[in-house]
Amino acid sequence: MDDQIDARLAEMEVKLAFQDELLDALNATVARQQKDMELLQQQIRLLYQQFRQAQPDDATSGLSLRDELPPHY
Image (cartoon, rainbow, N blue to C red; front, side):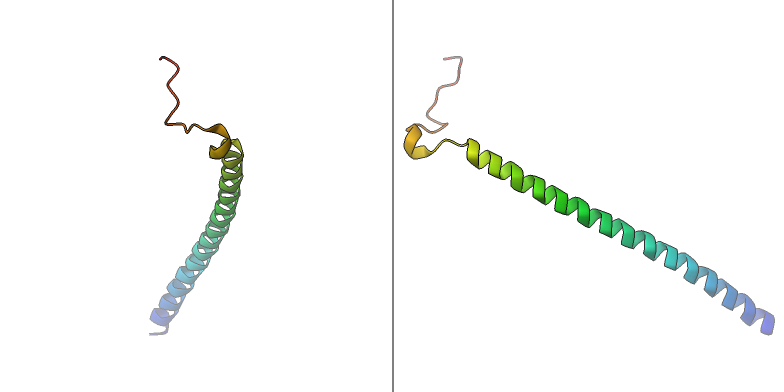
């Protein structure tokens, strides 16, 4: 009976060790993804600012992009 209990206890300890390793790996992945998302959000903000700065003011240009003719006309 003690051998069965010892075997089950050892099996549970092994499973727990694997779960701890998996949890650490998942935590590291989530942390890396969070940093990646923050970097991407920062890049999107920068691109948006550059886009806004590159846009002509509608009041000063007089024409919108729809009003301009394509270069082949």
